[in-house]
Amino acid sequence: MKPHRIEQLAKQAGLVQGPWANGNKERIWQESRDFPDALETFADMVLQDVVTAIKKEIVSQSEQGINTNILGLNQAIFAINDLREVK
Image (cartoon, rainbow, N blue to C red; front, side):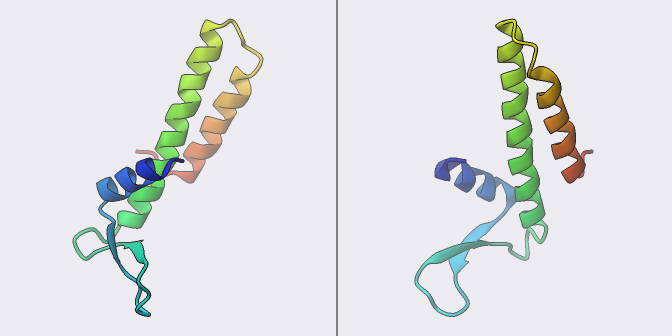
């Protein structure tokens, strides 16, 4: 996943950038009091991006008449959704 997409999803999930507790100058993404479930939300958003990418590939292959991979791609979606709390 591209760094700008990770940053975009992190912000959308409510993660914030802050300093490491040990004083290192690098910054780290972390949850805040305003968004205590931000990490779980971020992880779910990443998985949703993966599912969306797979669905686009299914459509692309279907339009090209390639059907041999579609069952496996659908199985991948089901496996990913098992990891998620699909609502």
